[in-house]
Image 1 (cartoon, one colour):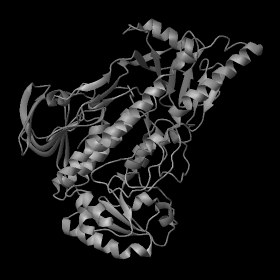
Image 2 (spheres, rainbow, N blue to C red; image 1 turned 90 degrees about the vertical axis):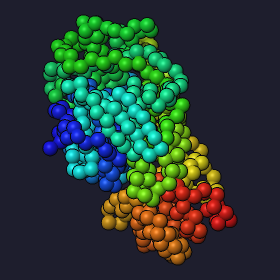
Image 3 (tube, rainbow, N blue to C red; image 1 turned 30 degrees about the vertical axis):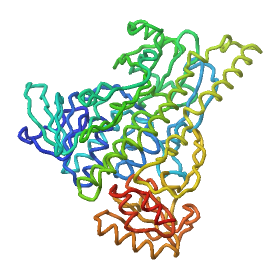
Image 4 (cartoon, rainbow, N blue to C red; image 1 turned 180 degrees about the vertical axis):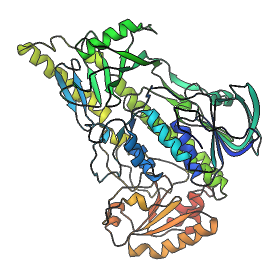
Length: 559
C-alpha cells in the first residue's frame, strides 16, 4: 500500500524498467501531472530523491483554480477536511504594528477563500500548508493503478532517441543504479532541476533579489490567547522586526518570515527569536521546528521542451512567493501537459498538442511572474513610518497614511482573480480564434469570457450543481441553442471517427447561450474554450483541437 508524505513512499519492483511517462519530482507539480495521466490510464513512474517530510509548509494557499482541479479529481472536500485550521476561519490579511499591536489595515477574503457560493467559480481557495496538499495528492494517486512512486531515488542522466527516453536513476540508500525507459520524461524537480541541466536549458532573468528567512515555530499558549482579530496572515509593520506571521494550525504552530539585510545569508536562533518576540509584541517561549533560508528570483527557462523531455513548475519558472502563485502555477503546468501527453499516448493527439504546451504556458508564466514582482516591491519594512504606535494626532496621521499606502499597494496581492482565472491562451495552435476582441487584461477583477482561449465561464445549474461537474474527461461540446444541433452532431461524429473523447452536453434548457454568446462551445479537458460558434467544418475543427491540422483550415471554412 502506498503511503503519504511523512512516512516512506511505496517502493516498487526494482526490475520495472519501462513506463509511458517518467516524472522526476513528486511535489505538487509532479503529483498533479501524474493524476492527470493516471486518470486517463497512462502508465506513470515518479521518482523522488527527498523524503519530503518535515514541517516546512512552503506554499500555504491553494487558490480557486487549483481547487477546481482538485474538485475534478474528487479530492477538494478531502483537502478541506485535512486543512489544520477550521473551515470557518477568516481568510483575512491583517496589517498591524505587532501581533498584539495597533491594526493598520485589513484586507478581507484574501484569495477568495471565504466558504461561500460564488457565481464565478465552484470552489473557494483554501489556506493549507503544502505538505497537507501533497498528502491528499498522494492519497489520490494510491487509487490510480497505473501510477507508481519510487522514493529515495535520484535521476542522474538521460538520453533520448526518436522513439524513447532512457534515464539513469540511483537508489540513494544502496547506491544502486538502473535504467528506466519511457516514451516521455518530465522534469518537475524544482529550482535546481537536474532535468533542466541535462536538457541544456538556461534560466534567464534576475537572480537573488534578497535572502529571506522562514521559521516554523510553536508558540505555546497563543491559541488560547489569540490576537483580537483572527487572520491567515499578519503583516507586522515596525522598525525593529518587520515581517510576516501566519497560523498553520490551531495548536500554536506558526510560520514567521523576515527579510535579511543585503549581503546577509544567515542569522542566529537567538536573534531571530528576539525579532519574533518583538513582532508578537510581548515576551514568549518559542520552539523552533524548521528553518529555511531562500532567495527570491525572477527567472524563466529559455525552452521547456527538448523532443521527448519537458519541464514543468519551478524547473522552468521562478518568482517571489508574494501573491501565492508558485505552487498553483506549477499545478496548472501539470494539468496542461498531462492531458496533452495522454492524448498523444492514447493515439488521438498530434504533436501540435505537445508544441502548444510551451506556447500556451509561457505567456501565463510571464504575466504571473510580473504580478509577483510587483507584489514584491512593497514589503513590511517598506511600510514602516514613525509614530505608528503613538497616541494623539501624530499617531493617527501616521496610521492613516500607512493604511492608504497598504490599500494602494497590497490589495492587488490578495485580490488577484484576474490573474488566477483570467489567464488566457492567445495565438495557441490548438484553439480556433473566432475573431472577437480580447478584453483588456485585468489584475484584481475577473470578467468571465467564452472567447476561445479563455477559461470556460462558470455557472451554477438549476439543480445546484456546477456546470464544471458535467464536463467530461475529454472535450465537452456544449449545445446551448437549437441553432447548433446539426453542427453538434457533425462535430461529435468527426470526433468519434478520430478517437477524440468528446461528451455532448445538451443545455438548451438553460440561459447559458447568453453567457457563452454562441449556440455551441467546445471545452477542452482543462476547462478552456477551444471553439465556439454556430457552424463549422467539423473535420477541420477536430483536426485542429487534436493537434493534427493547421487552424487556418477552420478559419477558411468559417469564412
